[in-house]
Image (cartoon, rainbow, N blue to C red; front, side):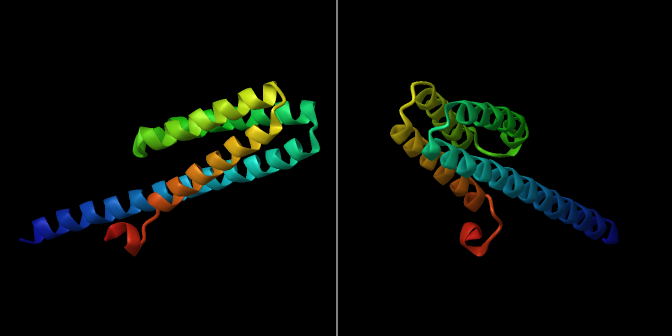
Length: 127
């Protein structure tokens, strides 16, 4: 009897601990990329081509690093939406269509915020 209780307790503790680490990683990754995108938005508004292009490359590199880990426990549809928006943003920056680029940037931020909210442990998400 006690053996089963101990095993169940260990499994529950392992699940809760893992979930806590994954939520923390997701929240930190998403907020980092969002902050970088907000900085990029300011660079786009200033129309500094070199700085904007360099920042976009940096964001894409960081996103690919985080994507590999996030893809393990987050739905691929959600992550692919961000990937698509970032690719479109990169294209708009290359052709210097900044107005449309800012629109794609805002979509990327929205999807990232949605991912953070969706995978956050809260009563709304549980029920």
